[in-house]
Amino acid sequence: MKSSFTGARVVQKDVVKLARKQVATVAAVSVPEGVTLEKMGKVRLETRATPQTRNIHSPDTPSSPAGPHPRRGRGRRDVDNSRNGFFQDKSPTHVAHPSDRTHFFSRTQDLLNTTYYPKGEDTDCSRKPWIVIDAEGLRLGRLSTLIATYLRGGNVGSYSPSMNMGTYVVVINAEKVTVSGKKMTDKVYRRHETGRPGSMKEETFIKLQQRIPERIIEKAVKGMLPKNRMGREVFGQMKVYAGPDHPHAAQSPVDVTAEVKARCYSSSQKK
Figure 1: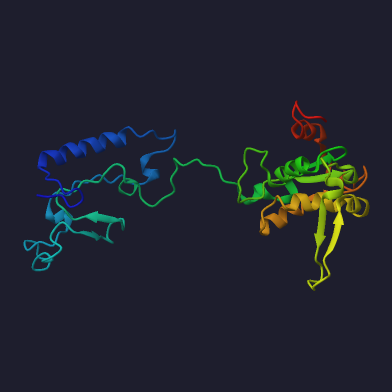
Figure 2: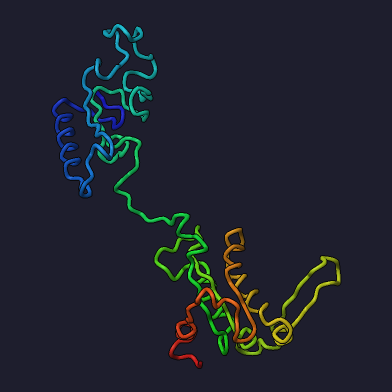
């Protein structure tokens, strides 16, 4: 007979060898302590070599039609809803392949998969820690990248891009942040509030720093966050203030200014 899923000629002794190899493969699977194969799903390793157990449309069986389809033949693949619902080969010599997981485990939870994914309680805002950063003398770009990392939670091992795993960040002394080169006079901030022609306003870095110093850090960090609902939610966790005081002493924020300075500057850069 010819097998429908390989196209090779298979004899009965080859079927027995394949069945023994699959049994040995299942026995070699490492199962966690306290977990049995019954909990993971019933193992199905059946050779199904007779038409009665295979339910093949055969003229010999009384419940079958007169004969096979003239074009499809006996080796066609079909869906048997009385079994697990996956595709089964109707060839008498078909044996389940060990690489196909659906032949071994039923549709239950895979207990061998231990990949961590954050839960809703992991993103609870009431459990998030608070940190404070003193921006005095720090570069705007390097400071903003670290603030964005803290806000998204990229510094923790449980970070997931689709979940809010970050912390609350309090930035003080926003008016003392610095920039390199000639950006103090050449960097321009534009805003278009009304949308009408001729209403766009331009402002240099030094002028905006004198007027609203908090907006400089806010615009820099917002440009580094995702442009979606999660980015807007994460952006609300940053609190920027001009001066050394802030109203979040009740949250007991941890001062990480020394860590931020160590990461902002390398050994070859001037601090």
